[in-house]
Image (cartoon, rainbow, N blue to C red; front, side, top):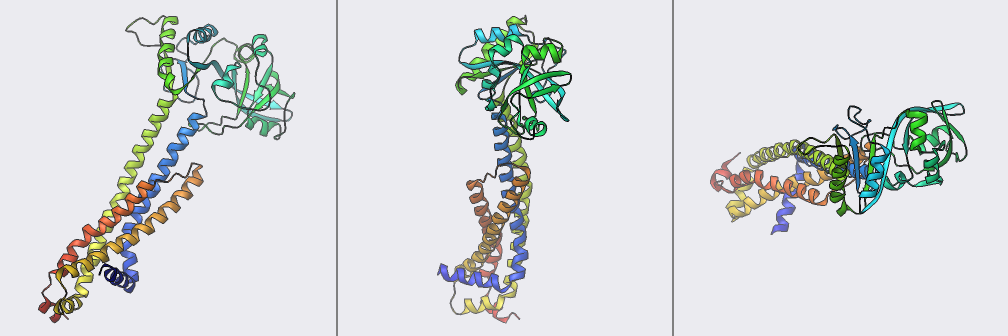
Length: 403
């Protein structure tokens, strides 16, 4: 019985193909928009997490001042960190992979006739461990380079590609503003950061060489701390904050003149923001589903009016009102289900194109796809019930007289 009802419903949809397609548009647009928004939002969240993970494992970042975390230098209005702070953290902290200082400056990097604007980072050997930098060729900075303030440097892939045509630059000379240094190694590519900056457009130098030759001061902008495991992050953060309060003479009840940020918390915050925006956009797109449901109700009412005589004949020869109601209800569900299927395919196609253009992962959510399809079917049931009920309650005699 149900199979015959499905056949009749499909035949009715095919008989009025153009009208059925126009009726489906609301459902198609609504489902496609929801699927596309959720998929793009999931991809953006995964991109944020992947970009932040490139900054290092279980990472904490200590900065002078109270500025919002993001690209840019430290707050110069607060007292900067120094090498004694770094040494104290290394000696006091437990369950850490490493503690690395960092000071940065924008310079003009020149090699031969080519030049490029680059970020120079003064640091030490621990930086490559803490930030998970992998040496592509050559070697990293050594303890001997740090102690002697040797004029050597390690470069990123953007510098290598721009100034050395992608060739191995080992032993070549690189000029940073007016300072010359020897290239001793190249790190593997990390791509763009979560803040949109090119992480490969960087030059690493021994901290003391950077301070003496480029910065002209002993300021340290950041101290990067990598906990041994994710479970150690909270205890390491608390210990680092206590030690820095003591060293910077922050009295009880006073606000800290520094910040120690957990990058995983920043990732969670950014992901939550993305999820909220995705939810809002999906809710707006979901309004199209209601519009599509109204369209289905309208077309089913028209169909009942057009087929009044047919309904009267079926009722006159013994069909039950329940059977007529089921027939029209199935037709509404078939319309909505077709719209849902087309909307899912269209939404996935649009999401794939958008994620490819935005260079973010194409991350589908099977529960969301299933929910969108079930919701489209539910729309068919809800908005198709009233026209189906009206058809089932027709008086056979009056229906047969209908012209």
